[in-house]
Length: 279
Length: 317
Image 1 (tube, one colour):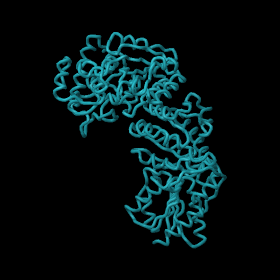
Image 2 (cartoon, helix red, strand yellow):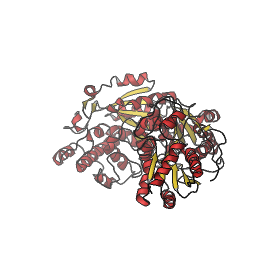
Image 3 (cartoon, chains in turn purple, cyan):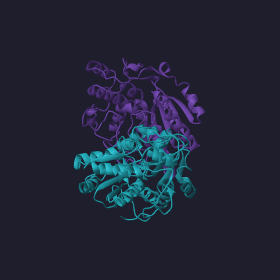
Image 4 (cartoon, rainbow over the protein chains, first blue to last red):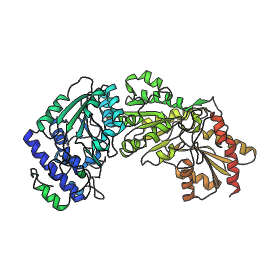
Protein backbone atom coordinates (compact mmCIF):
# COMPACT_ATOMS: atom_id res chain seq x y z
CA UNK A 1 0.00 0.00 0.00
CA UNK A 2 1.54 3.30 -1.07
CA UNK A 3 1.87 5.77 1.80
CA UNK A 4 0.92 9.41 1.40
CA UNK A 5 3.15 12.31 2.26
CA UNK A 6 1.84 12.68 5.83
CA UNK A 7 2.35 8.98 6.44
CA UNK A 8 5.83 9.11 4.93
CA UNK A 9 6.68 12.05 7.18
CA UNK A 10 5.60 10.07 10.22
CA UNK A 11 7.53 6.97 9.19
CA UNK A 12 10.67 9.02 8.53
CA UNK A 13 10.47 10.56 11.99
CA UNK A 14 10.35 7.10 13.55
CA UNK A 15 13.19 5.88 11.32
CA UNK A 16 15.33 8.80 12.50
CA UNK A 17 14.57 7.88 16.11
CA UNK A 18 15.54 4.28 15.35
CA UNK A 19 18.82 5.38 13.76
CA UNK A 20 19.90 7.53 16.68
CA UNK A 21 18.84 4.96 19.29
CA UNK A 22 20.52 2.06 17.41
CA UNK A 23 23.81 3.85 16.95
CA UNK A 24 23.79 5.11 20.53
CA UNK A 25 23.23 1.59 21.87
CA UNK A 26 25.90 0.15 19.56
CA UNK A 27 28.32 2.92 20.62
CA UNK A 28 29.50 3.06 17.01
CA UNK A 29 28.09 3.35 13.51
CA UNK A 30 27.15 5.98 10.96
CA UNK A 31 24.30 8.30 11.92
CA UNK A 32 25.10 11.30 9.67
CA UNK A 33 24.46 9.77 6.26
CA UNK A 34 21.70 7.58 7.64
CA UNK A 35 19.81 10.71 8.69
CA UNK A 36 20.49 12.45 5.38
CA UNK A 37 19.14 9.53 3.36
CA UNK A 38 16.16 8.70 5.62
CA UNK A 39 13.55 10.46 3.54
CA UNK A 40 14.84 8.95 0.29
CA UNK A 41 14.71 5.36 1.56
CA UNK A 42 11.39 5.92 3.31
CA UNK A 43 9.83 7.15 0.07
CA UNK A 44 11.46 4.33 -1.87
CA UNK A 45 10.23 1.51 0.36
CA UNK A 46 6.84 2.92 1.31
CA UNK A 47 5.77 4.48 -1.97
CA UNK A 48 7.87 3.83 -5.05
CA UNK A 49 9.38 0.39 -5.09
CA UNK A 50 7.42 -2.72 -6.01
CA UNK A 51 8.83 -5.01 -3.39
CA UNK A 52 6.98 -6.94 -0.74
CA UNK A 53 8.38 -8.21 2.53
CA UNK A 54 6.02 -11.19 2.65
CA UNK A 55 7.03 -12.57 -0.73
CA UNK A 56 10.60 -11.31 -0.86
CA UNK A 57 13.24 -13.60 -2.35
CA UNK A 58 16.85 -12.77 -3.14
CA UNK A 59 16.35 -13.35 -6.86
CA UNK A 60 13.83 -10.45 -6.92
CA UNK A 61 11.70 -12.30 -9.47
CA UNK A 62 8.63 -10.23 -10.26
CA UNK A 63 9.72 -7.47 -7.88
CA UNK A 64 12.00 -4.46 -7.86
CA UNK A 65 15.40 -4.83 -6.23
CA UNK A 66 17.40 -2.40 -4.12
CA UNK A 67 21.10 -2.31 -3.27
CA UNK A 68 22.59 -0.01 -0.67
CA UNK A 69 25.96 0.71 -2.24
CA UNK A 70 26.97 3.00 0.61
CA UNK A 71 26.88 0.14 3.10
CA UNK A 72 27.77 2.29 6.09
CA UNK A 73 24.22 3.64 5.90
CA UNK A 74 23.17 0.32 7.45
CA UNK A 75 21.23 1.97 10.33
CA UNK A 76 18.72 3.67 8.04
CA UNK A 77 18.51 0.57 5.86
CA UNK A 78 17.80 -1.70 8.81
CA UNK A 79 15.21 0.64 10.27
CA UNK A 80 13.35 1.03 6.96
CA UNK A 81 13.40 -2.75 6.38
CA UNK A 82 12.13 -3.42 9.90
CA UNK A 83 9.40 -0.81 9.66
CA UNK A 84 8.40 -2.23 6.25
CA UNK A 85 7.97 -5.68 7.78
CA UNK A 86 11.11 -7.49 6.63
CA UNK A 87 12.12 -8.41 10.18
CA UNK A 88 11.13 -7.88 13.78
CA UNK A 89 11.91 -4.28 14.81
CA UNK A 90 13.07 -5.62 18.21
CA UNK A 91 16.22 -6.85 16.45
CA UNK A 92 17.28 -3.25 15.97
CA UNK A 93 18.57 -3.21 19.55
CA UNK A 94 21.24 -5.74 18.56
CA UNK A 95 22.94 -3.68 15.83
CA UNK A 96 26.70 -4.38 15.68
CA UNK A 97 26.60 -6.78 18.63
CA UNK A 98 28.29 -10.18 18.55
CA UNK A 99 25.96 -12.77 17.04
CA UNK A 100 23.51 -10.16 15.75
CA UNK A 101 21.65 -10.49 12.47
CA UNK A 102 22.35 -6.80 12.03
CA UNK A 103 26.02 -6.73 11.09
CA UNK A 104 27.90 -3.42 11.08
CA UNK A 105 27.48 -3.31 7.34
CA UNK A 106 24.74 -5.09 5.35
CA UNK A 107 25.20 -8.83 4.97
CA UNK A 108 23.16 -11.51 3.25
CA UNK A 109 21.60 -14.55 4.84
CA UNK A 110 20.78 -12.92 8.16
CA UNK A 111 17.62 -10.94 7.49
CA UNK A 112 15.22 -10.70 4.58
CA UNK A 113 15.43 -7.81 2.17
CA UNK A 114 19.17 -7.59 1.51
CA UNK A 115 20.34 -8.60 -1.96
CA UNK A 116 24.05 -8.02 -1.68
CA UNK A 117 26.55 -7.23 1.04
CA UNK A 118 28.08 -3.77 0.93
CA UNK A 119 30.55 -1.69 2.84
CA UNK A 120 33.51 -1.60 0.52
CA UNK A 121 32.46 1.41 -1.52
CA UNK A 122 31.83 1.88 -5.22
CA UNK A 123 30.52 -1.60 -5.96
CA UNK A 124 26.74 -1.49 -5.61
CA UNK A 125 26.08 0.36 -8.84
CA UNK A 126 27.70 -2.48 -10.79
CA UNK A 127 25.66 -5.13 -8.98
CA UNK A 128 22.47 -3.15 -9.54
CA UNK A 129 23.37 -2.84 -13.23
CA UNK A 130 23.76 -6.63 -13.30
CA UNK A 131 20.32 -7.07 -11.77
CA UNK A 132 18.82 -4.59 -14.24
CA UNK A 133 20.45 -6.43 -17.14
CA UNK A 134 19.35 -9.82 -15.76
CA UNK A 135 15.78 -8.57 -15.56
CA UNK A 136 15.91 -7.38 -19.15
CA UNK A 137 17.36 -10.71 -20.31
CA UNK A 138 14.64 -12.57 -18.41
CA UNK A 139 11.81 -10.37 -19.68
CA UNK A 140 11.01 -9.16 -16.15
CA UNK A 141 9.76 -5.59 -16.39
CA UNK A 142 10.82 -4.65 -12.88
CA UNK A 143 13.65 -2.32 -11.94
CA UNK A 144 16.86 -2.16 -9.93
CA UNK A 145 17.44 0.70 -7.50
CA UNK A 146 20.70 1.61 -5.83
CA UNK A 147 21.72 4.29 -3.32
CA UNK A 148 25.26 5.67 -3.38
CA UNK A 149 26.93 8.27 -1.25
CA UNK A 150 28.26 11.40 -2.93
CA UNK A 151 31.77 10.84 -1.56
CA UNK A 152 31.46 7.34 -2.99
CA UNK A 153 31.56 8.77 -6.50
CA UNK A 154 35.30 9.26 -5.93
CA UNK A 155 35.57 5.51 -6.55
CA UNK A 156 36.54 4.75 -10.16
CA UNK A 157 34.24 1.74 -10.40
CA UNK A 158 31.22 4.05 -10.21
CA UNK A 159 32.22 5.51 -13.57
CA UNK A 160 32.95 2.09 -15.06
CA UNK A 161 29.40 1.16 -14.14
CA UNK A 162 28.09 4.47 -15.51
CA UNK A 163 29.51 3.71 -18.95
CA UNK A 164 28.36 0.08 -18.83
CA UNK A 165 24.76 0.96 -17.93
CA UNK A 166 24.45 3.46 -20.76
CA UNK A 167 26.07 1.14 -23.29
CA UNK A 168 23.61 -1.61 -22.39
CA UNK A 169 20.66 0.82 -22.33
CA UNK A 170 19.63 -0.04 -18.78
CA UNK A 171 16.68 2.31 -18.41
CA UNK A 172 15.37 0.00 -15.68
CA UNK A 173 18.29 1.04 -13.47
CA UNK A 174 17.55 3.89 -11.04
CA UNK A 175 20.59 5.13 -9.16
CA UNK A 176 20.30 7.65 -6.36
CA UNK A 177 23.00 9.74 -4.74
CA UNK A 178 22.72 11.06 -1.20
CA UNK A 179 24.27 14.42 -2.09
CA UNK A 180 24.99 15.75 1.40
CA UNK A 181 28.35 17.27 0.51
CA UNK A 182 30.20 15.59 3.37
CA UNK A 183 32.56 12.67 3.71
CA UNK A 184 34.40 11.23 6.67
CA UNK A 185 37.36 13.60 6.56
CA UNK A 186 35.37 16.77 5.89
CA UNK A 187 33.36 18.66 3.30
CA UNK A 188 33.80 16.88 -0.03
CA UNK A 189 35.21 19.89 -1.83
CA UNK A 190 38.06 20.04 0.70
CA UNK A 191 38.82 16.31 0.47
CA UNK A 192 38.57 15.42 -3.21
CA UNK A 193 36.24 17.55 -5.30
CA UNK A 194 33.54 15.78 -7.29
CA UNK A 195 31.58 18.75 -8.58
CA UNK A 196 29.79 19.45 -10.81
CA UNK A 197 28.26 16.09 -10.06
CA UNK A 198 25.12 16.64 -12.15
CA UNK A 199 27.17 17.65 -15.17
CA UNK A 200 29.39 14.61 -14.79
CA UNK A 201 26.37 12.28 -14.93
CA UNK A 202 24.91 14.21 -17.85
CA UNK A 203 28.24 13.88 -19.65
CA UNK A 204 28.06 10.13 -19.11
CA UNK A 205 24.76 10.16 -20.98
CA UNK A 206 22.41 9.39 -18.12
CA UNK A 207 19.03 10.93 -17.41
CA UNK A 208 19.82 13.16 -14.44
CA UNK A 209 17.20 14.40 -12.02
CA UNK A 210 18.04 16.78 -9.18
CA UNK A 211 15.65 16.80 -6.23
CA UNK A 212 15.32 17.94 -2.62
CA UNK A 213 16.00 14.82 -0.58
CA UNK A 214 14.12 16.17 2.42
CA UNK A 215 10.91 17.13 0.61
CA UNK A 216 8.64 14.17 -0.09
CA UNK A 217 6.85 15.96 -2.88
CA UNK A 218 10.17 16.55 -4.61
CA UNK A 219 11.33 12.97 -3.95
CA UNK A 220 8.14 11.40 -5.32
CA UNK A 221 8.23 13.68 -8.33
CA UNK A 222 11.81 12.61 -9.02
CA UNK A 223 10.80 8.95 -8.85
CA UNK A 224 7.99 9.70 -11.30
CA UNK A 225 10.46 11.29 -13.73
CA UNK A 226 12.77 8.27 -13.39
CA UNK A 227 10.20 5.92 -14.92
CA UNK A 228 10.94 6.86 -18.52
CA UNK A 229 11.67 3.84 -20.73
CA UNK A 230 13.97 5.71 -23.10
CA UNK A 231 17.07 3.53 -23.14
CA UNK A 232 18.89 5.67 -20.57
CA UNK A 233 19.80 4.78 -16.99
CA UNK A 234 18.59 7.25 -14.34
CA UNK A 235 20.53 9.12 -11.70
CA UNK A 236 18.59 11.03 -9.07
CA UNK A 237 20.83 13.44 -7.23
CA UNK A 238 19.12 14.11 -3.92
CA UNK A 239 20.32 17.30 -2.26
CA UNK A 240 20.44 16.47 1.42
CA UNK A 241 21.93 17.55 4.72
CA UNK A 242 24.11 15.24 6.78
CA UNK A 243 22.54 14.56 10.17
CA UNK A 244 19.20 16.02 9.05
CA UNK A 245 16.56 16.16 11.77
CA UNK A 246 18.88 16.40 14.77
CA UNK A 247 20.07 19.98 15.27
CA UNK A 248 23.47 19.26 16.76
CA UNK A 249 24.31 16.80 13.98
CA UNK A 250 22.90 18.71 11.03
CA UNK A 251 25.39 19.79 8.40
CA UNK A 252 28.50 18.47 10.13
CA UNK A 253 30.83 15.80 8.74
CA UNK A 254 31.80 15.04 12.35
CA UNK A 255 28.70 12.85 12.61
CA UNK A 256 29.58 10.71 9.62
CA UNK A 257 30.75 7.83 11.76
CA UNK A 258 30.35 8.72 15.42
CA UNK A 259 27.85 7.53 18.01
CA UNK A 260 26.01 10.03 20.21
CA UNK A 261 26.26 9.81 24.00
CA UNK A 262 23.19 8.80 26.04
CA UNK A 263 22.60 12.49 26.81
CA UNK A 264 22.87 13.48 23.17
CA UNK A 265 20.50 10.66 22.24
CA UNK A 266 17.96 11.90 24.79
CA UNK A 267 18.29 15.39 23.35
CA UNK A 268 17.74 14.06 19.81
CA UNK A 269 14.61 12.21 20.95
CA UNK A 270 13.04 15.54 21.94
CA UNK A 271 13.43 16.64 18.30
CA UNK A 272 12.02 13.50 16.64
CA UNK A 273 8.42 12.49 17.13
CA UNK A 274 7.71 8.88 18.10
CA UNK A 275 5.09 7.86 15.56
CA UNK A 276 5.17 4.07 15.21
CA UNK A 277 6.39 3.10 18.66
CA UNK A 278 10.04 2.68 19.60
CA UNK A 279 11.44 -0.85 19.25
CA UNK B 1 53.27 -47.66 -15.40
CA UNK B 2 50.18 -46.70 -17.33
CA UNK B 3 51.12 -45.02 -20.58
CA UNK B 4 49.51 -41.66 -21.23
CA UNK B 5 49.40 -40.53 -24.83
CA UNK B 6 49.39 -36.89 -25.91
CA UNK B 7 46.66 -36.78 -28.54
CA UNK B 8 48.04 -33.46 -29.80
CA UNK B 9 48.92 -30.31 -27.93
CA UNK B 10 46.09 -27.89 -27.30
CA UNK B 11 45.65 -24.76 -25.20
CA UNK B 12 43.44 -25.15 -22.15
CA UNK B 13 41.76 -21.80 -22.83
CA UNK B 14 40.28 -23.37 -25.96
CA UNK B 15 38.98 -26.14 -23.72
CA UNK B 16 37.21 -23.45 -21.74
CA UNK B 17 35.77 -21.94 -24.92
CA UNK B 18 34.45 -25.33 -26.03
CA UNK B 19 33.09 -26.14 -22.56
CA UNK B 20 31.36 -22.78 -22.37
CA UNK B 21 29.42 -23.49 -25.57
CA UNK B 22 28.35 -26.88 -24.21
CA UNK B 23 27.32 -25.28 -20.92
CA UNK B 24 25.37 -22.64 -22.83
CA UNK B 25 23.47 -25.30 -24.75
CA UNK B 26 22.77 -27.24 -21.60
CA UNK B 27 21.51 -24.29 -19.55
CA UNK B 28 19.85 -21.21 -21.10
CA UNK B 29 20.77 -19.21 -18.00
CA UNK B 30 24.50 -19.46 -18.69
CA UNK B 31 25.86 -16.06 -19.75
CA UNK B 32 29.42 -14.93 -20.48
CA UNK B 33 31.08 -11.61 -19.67
CA UNK B 34 34.32 -10.32 -21.13
CA UNK B 35 36.46 -7.26 -20.51
CA UNK B 36 37.75 -6.76 -24.06
CA UNK B 37 39.44 -10.18 -24.10
CA UNK B 38 36.72 -12.23 -25.77
CA UNK B 39 39.17 -13.57 -28.33
CA UNK B 40 41.92 -14.38 -25.85
CA UNK B 41 39.40 -16.22 -23.66
CA UNK B 42 38.08 -18.15 -26.68
CA UNK B 43 34.56 -16.90 -26.04
CA UNK B 44 33.89 -16.16 -29.75
CA UNK B 45 31.97 -19.35 -30.41
CA UNK B 46 29.70 -18.74 -27.41
CA UNK B 47 29.16 -15.10 -28.44
CA UNK B 48 28.29 -16.20 -31.96
CA UNK B 49 25.85 -18.91 -30.90
CA UNK B 50 24.28 -16.91 -28.05
CA UNK B 51 24.75 -13.22 -28.93
CA UNK B 52 22.17 -11.98 -26.44
CA UNK B 53 23.86 -13.95 -23.67
CA UNK B 54 27.33 -12.55 -24.30
CA UNK B 55 27.96 -9.33 -22.39
CA UNK B 56 30.89 -7.16 -23.35
CA UNK B 57 32.00 -5.03 -20.39
CA UNK B 58 34.93 -3.18 -21.90
CA UNK B 59 38.22 -2.72 -20.08
CA UNK B 60 36.57 -2.41 -16.70
CA UNK B 61 37.05 -5.61 -14.73
CA UNK B 62 35.82 -4.29 -11.38
CA UNK B 63 32.47 -3.40 -12.90
CA UNK B 64 32.37 -6.74 -14.72
CA UNK B 65 32.62 -8.67 -11.46
CA UNK B 66 29.85 -6.60 -9.89
CA UNK B 67 27.59 -6.96 -12.93
CA UNK B 68 28.20 -10.71 -12.84
CA UNK B 69 27.10 -10.81 -9.20
CA UNK B 70 23.92 -8.91 -10.06
CA UNK B 71 23.20 -11.23 -12.98
CA UNK B 72 23.73 -14.23 -10.72
CA UNK B 73 21.16 -12.85 -8.28
CA UNK B 74 18.55 -12.88 -11.04
CA UNK B 75 19.22 -16.57 -11.74
CA UNK B 76 21.83 -16.28 -14.47
CA UNK B 77 25.02 -18.35 -14.37
CA UNK B 78 27.69 -15.81 -15.35
CA UNK B 79 31.17 -16.78 -16.52
CA UNK B 80 33.37 -13.74 -16.06
CA UNK B 81 36.48 -14.00 -18.18
CA UNK B 82 39.83 -12.26 -18.28
CA UNK B 83 43.52 -12.94 -17.72
CA UNK B 84 44.19 -14.56 -14.36
CA UNK B 85 45.73 -11.43 -12.89
CA UNK B 86 42.78 -9.27 -13.94
CA UNK B 87 40.05 -11.49 -12.43
CA UNK B 88 41.94 -11.92 -9.15
CA UNK B 89 44.53 -9.38 -8.04
CA UNK B 90 43.06 -6.46 -9.92
CA UNK B 91 39.57 -7.04 -8.54
CA UNK B 92 40.24 -8.84 -5.29
CA UNK B 93 37.97 -6.69 -3.17
CA UNK B 94 35.14 -6.96 -5.70
CA UNK B 95 35.47 -10.74 -5.79
CA UNK B 96 35.65 -10.83 -2.00
CA UNK B 97 32.55 -8.70 -1.35
CA UNK B 98 30.31 -9.34 -4.36
CA UNK B 99 31.13 -12.99 -5.07
CA UNK B 100 32.61 -14.71 -2.02
CA UNK B 101 30.96 -12.90 0.91
CA UNK B 102 27.81 -12.42 -1.18
CA UNK B 103 27.84 -16.11 -2.07
CA UNK B 104 26.77 -15.35 -5.62
CA UNK B 105 26.85 -17.99 -8.32
CA UNK B 106 29.66 -16.35 -10.32
CA UNK B 107 32.28 -18.31 -12.25
CA UNK B 108 35.62 -16.53 -12.63
CA UNK B 109 37.16 -17.78 -15.85
CA UNK B 110 40.87 -17.20 -15.50
CA UNK B 111 43.06 -17.54 -18.55
CA UNK B 112 46.77 -16.93 -19.18
CA UNK B 113 47.64 -18.04 -15.65
CA UNK B 114 51.25 -18.40 -14.56
CA UNK B 115 54.52 -17.70 -16.34
CA UNK B 116 53.69 -19.77 -19.43
CA UNK B 117 51.65 -16.86 -20.70
CA UNK B 118 55.13 -16.15 -22.00
CA UNK B 119 56.34 -13.10 -23.83
CA UNK B 120 54.07 -10.49 -22.21
CA UNK B 121 56.16 -10.67 -19.05
CA UNK B 122 55.58 -10.23 -15.35
CA UNK B 123 52.74 -7.67 -15.37
CA UNK B 124 50.52 -10.28 -16.98
CA UNK B 125 51.96 -13.44 -15.41
CA UNK B 126 50.23 -13.95 -12.10
CA UNK B 127 51.88 -16.50 -9.85
CA UNK B 128 49.77 -15.43 -6.85
CA UNK B 129 46.19 -16.09 -7.93
CA UNK B 130 45.70 -19.46 -6.25
CA UNK B 131 46.71 -17.97 -2.91
CA UNK B 132 44.25 -15.11 -3.33
CA UNK B 133 41.35 -17.32 -4.36
CA UNK B 134 42.04 -20.12 -1.84
CA UNK B 135 41.93 -17.53 0.92
CA UNK B 136 38.31 -16.65 0.17
CA UNK B 137 35.69 -18.55 2.20
CA UNK B 138 33.38 -20.62 0.03
CA UNK B 139 35.43 -20.27 -3.15
CA UNK B 140 35.85 -23.46 -5.19
CA UNK B 141 39.20 -23.46 -6.99
CA UNK B 142 39.56 -25.63 -10.11
CA UNK B 143 42.77 -26.12 -12.12
CA UNK B 144 42.20 -28.70 -14.86
CA UNK B 145 45.30 -30.28 -16.38
CA UNK B 146 44.66 -30.29 -20.14
CA UNK B 147 42.21 -29.32 -22.88
CA UNK B 148 39.86 -32.27 -22.37
CA UNK B 149 39.68 -31.81 -18.63
CA UNK B 150 39.13 -28.07 -19.02
CA UNK B 151 36.06 -28.74 -21.20
CA UNK B 152 34.68 -30.99 -18.48
CA UNK B 153 35.66 -28.66 -15.63
CA UNK B 154 33.82 -25.80 -17.33
CA UNK B 155 30.68 -27.93 -17.50
CA UNK B 156 31.08 -28.94 -13.86
CA UNK B 157 31.52 -25.30 -12.82
CA UNK B 158 28.33 -24.36 -14.67
CA UNK B 159 26.40 -27.17 -13.00
CA UNK B 160 27.43 -26.44 -9.44
CA UNK B 161 25.82 -23.62 -7.48
CA UNK B 162 28.33 -21.27 -5.87
CA UNK B 163 31.41 -19.20 -6.63
CA UNK B 164 34.09 -20.91 -8.72
CA UNK B 165 37.59 -19.88 -9.73
CA UNK B 166 38.47 -21.80 -12.91
CA UNK B 167 42.12 -21.49 -13.90
CA UNK B 168 43.56 -22.32 -17.31
CA UNK B 169 46.29 -21.09 -19.61
CA UNK B 170 47.55 -19.80 -22.90
CA UNK B 171 50.19 -22.26 -24.14
CA UNK B 172 49.47 -25.45 -26.02
CA UNK B 173 50.10 -28.35 -23.68
CA UNK B 174 49.74 -32.12 -24.05
CA UNK B 175 46.14 -33.34 -24.16
CA UNK B 176 45.96 -36.77 -22.60
CA UNK B 177 42.90 -37.24 -20.38
CA UNK B 178 39.76 -39.08 -21.48
CA UNK B 179 37.51 -36.53 -23.23
CA UNK B 180 34.40 -38.30 -21.94
CA UNK B 181 35.40 -38.50 -18.29
CA UNK B 182 33.15 -36.13 -16.33
CA UNK B 183 34.90 -33.70 -14.01
CA UNK B 184 34.13 -34.44 -10.38
CA UNK B 185 34.63 -31.38 -8.20
CA UNK B 186 36.64 -32.28 -5.13
CA UNK B 187 38.14 -35.43 -6.61
CA UNK B 188 41.86 -36.14 -6.60
CA UNK B 189 42.61 -38.17 -9.74
CA UNK B 190 45.17 -40.92 -9.14
CA UNK B 191 46.79 -41.26 -12.57
CA UNK B 192 49.50 -43.74 -11.66
CA UNK B 193 49.63 -45.87 -8.52
CA UNK B 194 53.13 -46.09 -7.02
CA UNK B 195 54.93 -46.98 -3.82
CA UNK B 196 58.09 -44.88 -3.36
CA UNK B 197 57.01 -41.26 -3.71
CA UNK B 198 53.83 -39.25 -4.32
CA UNK B 199 53.96 -36.61 -7.06
CA UNK B 200 51.15 -34.14 -6.43
CA UNK B 201 50.54 -31.76 -9.31
CA UNK B 202 47.95 -29.41 -10.71
CA UNK B 203 47.32 -27.84 -14.11
CA UNK B 204 49.62 -28.71 -16.98
CA UNK B 205 52.34 -29.68 -14.50
CA UNK B 206 50.42 -32.95 -14.15
CA UNK B 207 51.84 -33.92 -17.55
CA UNK B 208 55.34 -32.98 -16.34
CA UNK B 209 54.77 -35.15 -13.27
CA UNK B 210 53.77 -38.09 -15.48
CA UNK B 211 56.94 -37.63 -17.54
CA UNK B 212 58.95 -37.50 -14.33
CA UNK B 213 57.27 -40.71 -13.15
CA UNK B 214 58.28 -42.44 -16.39
CA UNK B 215 61.87 -41.30 -15.98
CA UNK B 216 61.90 -42.44 -12.37
CA UNK B 217 60.47 -45.82 -13.35
CA UNK B 218 63.42 -46.31 -15.68
CA UNK B 219 65.61 -45.89 -12.60
CA UNK B 220 63.55 -48.37 -10.60
CA UNK B 221 61.60 -45.78 -8.60
CA UNK B 222 57.84 -46.19 -8.35
CA UNK B 223 56.06 -42.83 -8.32
CA UNK B 224 52.36 -42.28 -7.62
CA UNK B 225 50.94 -39.34 -9.59
CA UNK B 226 47.99 -37.38 -8.23
CA UNK B 227 46.16 -34.81 -10.34
CA UNK B 228 44.74 -32.25 -7.91
CA UNK B 229 42.33 -30.60 -10.31
CA UNK B 230 40.29 -29.24 -7.40
CA UNK B 231 42.68 -27.20 -5.28
CA UNK B 232 39.84 -26.17 -2.98
CA UNK B 233 38.04 -27.95 -1.38
CA UNK B 234 41.07 -30.22 -1.17
CA UNK B 235 40.53 -33.97 -0.73
CA UNK B 236 42.93 -34.33 2.20
CA UNK B 237 42.03 -38.00 2.73
CA UNK B 238 43.20 -38.92 -0.78
CA UNK B 239 46.49 -37.11 -0.23
CA UNK B 240 47.10 -38.75 3.13
CA UNK B 241 46.22 -42.19 1.83
CA UNK B 242 48.89 -41.84 -0.83
CA UNK B 243 51.52 -40.34 1.46
CA UNK B 244 50.82 -43.02 4.05
CA UNK B 245 51.82 -45.55 1.40
CA UNK B 246 54.81 -43.78 -0.17
CA UNK B 247 56.26 -41.75 2.72
CA UNK B 248 57.64 -39.00 0.47
CA UNK B 249 56.04 -36.14 -1.46
CA UNK B 250 56.72 -33.69 -4.28
CA UNK B 251 54.27 -30.89 -5.00
CA UNK B 252 54.37 -29.25 -8.44
CA UNK B 253 52.48 -26.15 -9.51
CA UNK B 254 52.83 -23.14 -11.80
CA UNK B 255 52.45 -20.64 -8.95
CA UNK B 256 54.81 -19.01 -6.52
CA UNK B 257 55.75 -20.58 -3.19
CA UNK B 258 53.04 -18.88 -1.17
CA UNK B 259 49.49 -19.98 -0.57
CA UNK B 260 49.05 -22.24 -3.57
CA UNK B 261 49.07 -26.03 -3.85
CA UNK B 262 52.51 -26.29 -2.20
CA UNK B 263 51.37 -24.86 1.11
CA UNK B 264 47.97 -26.56 0.86
CA UNK B 265 49.58 -30.00 0.57
CA UNK B 266 52.26 -29.20 3.16
CA UNK B 267 49.50 -28.31 5.60
CA UNK B 268 47.67 -31.58 4.96
CA UNK B 269 50.83 -33.69 5.18
CA UNK B 270 52.11 -31.96 8.32
CA UNK B 271 48.75 -32.36 10.02
CA UNK B 272 48.14 -35.97 8.97
CA UNK B 273 51.18 -38.02 7.90
CA UNK B 274 54.40 -36.02 8.36
CA UNK B 275 56.80 -36.99 5.56
CA UNK B 276 59.67 -35.45 3.59
CA UNK B 277 58.23 -32.99 1.08
CA UNK B 278 59.83 -31.09 -1.80
CA UNK B 279 58.35 -28.24 -3.79
CA UNK B 280 58.35 -27.42 -7.47
CA UNK B 281 57.04 -23.87 -7.84
CA UNK B 282 58.05 -20.36 -8.83
CA UNK B 283 59.59 -19.49 -5.46
CA UNK B 284 59.57 -15.87 -4.33
CA UNK B 285 59.87 -14.26 -7.74
CA UNK B 286 57.95 -12.51 -10.49
CA UNK B 287 57.90 -13.91 -14.00
CA UNK B 288 59.64 -12.48 -17.06
CA UNK B 289 59.43 -12.55 -20.84
CA UNK B 290 60.35 -15.70 -22.70
CA UNK B 291 58.86 -18.72 -24.41
CA UNK B 292 56.85 -21.07 -22.21
CA UNK B 293 59.51 -23.78 -22.57
CA UNK B 294 62.32 -21.39 -21.66
CA UNK B 295 60.42 -20.19 -18.62
CA UNK B 296 59.44 -23.70 -17.47
CA UNK B 297 63.12 -24.65 -17.49
CA UNK B 298 64.37 -21.39 -15.96
CA UNK B 299 61.89 -21.58 -13.09
CA UNK B 300 62.49 -25.28 -12.57
CA UNK B 301 58.94 -26.43 -13.28
CA UNK B 302 59.61 -29.20 -15.81
CA UNK B 303 59.74 -32.99 -15.57
CA UNK B 304 63.50 -33.09 -14.98
CA UNK B 305 63.20 -30.89 -11.91
CA UNK B 306 60.27 -32.93 -10.59
CA UNK B 307 62.24 -36.18 -10.97
CA UNK B 308 65.23 -34.69 -9.15
CA UNK B 309 62.98 -33.42 -6.36
CA UNK B 310 61.45 -36.89 -6.03
CA UNK B 311 64.84 -38.47 -5.46
CA UNK B 312 65.67 -35.82 -2.89
CA UNK B 313 62.39 -36.43 -1.03
CA UNK B 314 63.00 -40.18 -1.04
CA UNK B 315 66.55 -39.67 0.27
CA UNK B 316 65.16 -37.76 3.25
CA UNK B 317 62.89 -40.62 4.38
